[in-house]
Amino acid sequence: MKNIRIKYFYQLIASHLSILLIAFLILSLLFVRYVEDFAYEEKAQELESYGQKILEELESPRPGAGLQSYMSILDAQNINFIVFDQQSRILYPSTGNFPPVVLTQEEWNVIEQGDTLVVNRDVERFEYTVTFVALPYVENGRLIGGVLLASPISGTSEMISELNKSLLTTILIALAVALLLSLLLSKLHVSRLQRMQKAAAMISEGNYAVNLPESQFDEFGDLAKDFNKMANKLQQSNEEIDRLENRRRQFMADVSHEMRTPLTTIAGVIEGLRNHMIAEDQREKGIRLVSDETKRLMRLVNENLDYEKIRSNQVTLTKEEIEADELLEIIQEQLQMQAVEKGNVIEIETEPGQVIYGDMDRLIQVLTNIVKNSIQFTEKGRIVLKAFQEPQFMVIEVQDTGSGIDVDEIDLIWRRFYKADLSRGSGQFGLGLSIVKQLIALHDGDVRVESEKGKGTKFTIHLPHKGKLEEATEE
View 1 (cartoon, rainbow, N blue to C red):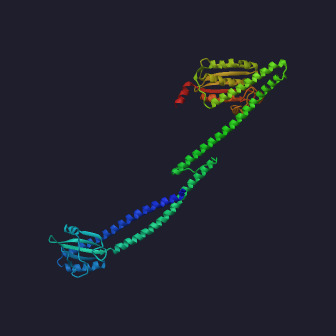
View 2 (cartoon, rainbow, N blue to C red):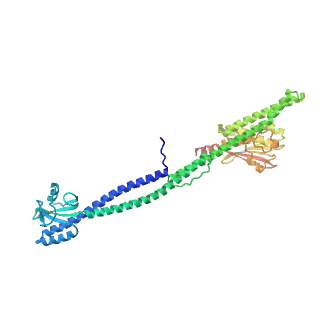
View 3 (tube, rainbow, N blue to C red):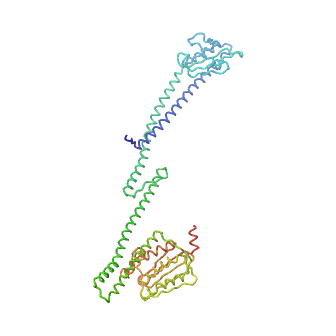
């Protein structure tokens, strides 16, 4: 069986109108019932008031003339009255076509107790439906009978009928207005849903540039706000995926480019050795060249693995307090030979007792990469290593007198595989400074570069003190 599908627009209209119809029906019934009871009660009170005056007239010395005048007045208002005894015989008027008084025992009990009997609607004892009241007639403390006044309810019924007609007209007008308002409100709600549906369709097609109007008025506004947040996060995620894909492609291109030269060299030397195309006195040089290029490839692989581990937070730091002069002396000893080969000298300027808080091995890796960079771009110059204390940080500086870096290139040196001087970068892969940036960030510090072309470069590292770092972690 095919599922029945009803548009939300029609569901809203049906729900609005059904609620209004039920509310109108209940209110109309209650209102008509209230008006009807009120009309009959008013009529009964009017009859009772006339009955009290008739009883007063019966107590006068000559009641006949007064009763006659009352009869004329009540006839004009279509009200009949009689005076009857306990045997239901009519005492006054002596003539007339008023039917015999037939009261039930319960009704007689009300009169005998001295209370007024009120019957709003009676359709059996009279020729037409009437409202009547019966008041007890007491003379000298003895119950004589009663005074009964009756009035046809036709006037009251006509009034109620007119009221019902007016009420029906009002209901129809109200329903028409309600239908119009329901159409407008339903269209408003459905249009908001349609905007969300259109936005969802755009997102499903890969277009995340959607912005629904937000408001604090109702849940639709909250939903639009959450929808915009979702679209924004999807946009950011999509951009991040694109960036990662571009980075992956760039990485593959860079690695392929960097590996092509050493692999070509290795393949050429091996082919020359195999075919005896290299002279005997050059073979040792060729083997050394193959060894150097192989080590270069190994460095490339190791640096890439190290970079990825650092970038993906797979590196765990083992922090400790390190003597600054000890750390700088290790760097000096490890790289002194490379510096001498280019006519450079590595100097240390620090005061004893200066303490650096960090991972010893990783800080050695950081400073080794920076100093190697300085050695590469400095010839017959000085490379100065400094460490000094500031209130918030421990500062390490590496300053050289090398060729320097162009101002436009300073922000680019942290990029992966970037080389500031391609003509002099055959031994480096452009990963060292990227690793430096990541490792310093893991230490909750920062690294800055100041350079001027032809006058040298200064790297400045700020590492927080142990106490300051713990306070920041607690906060």
